[in-house]
Image (cartoon, rainbow, N blue to C red; front, side, top):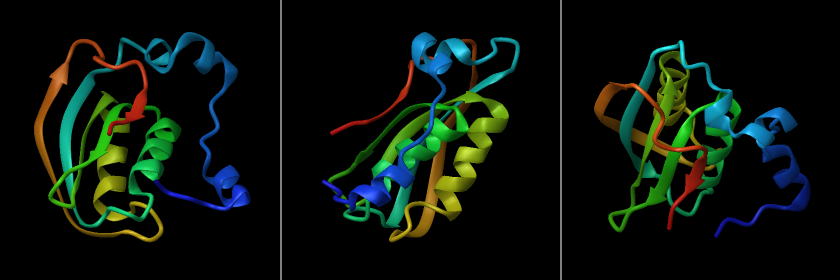
Length: 127
């Protein structure tokens, strides 16, 4: 579990409009844009540094859906879905930025494909 001082947590908390909360993120995404899905695994110092929490916050800020979780081998894995440009933004964040205390050695992407509809309604942390 990642503990942040209350002030830092307030800064890190994503801001979502009430319209998105009421309808759900998936409903707010335009169906006219091509949708994309990609699996990822992030290697480096990515556990014990709030990586999952920051990933969830960034995904919600960007406007993608999916999930993130720690693995038993010390990596973080997950899936991102959404409009192609937003998924590409999240891929860049997962490859280069991460949480403030993390160190990303490399990120592997797999099963990248076009999808006709989103499989998730939000972005969540899995345990």
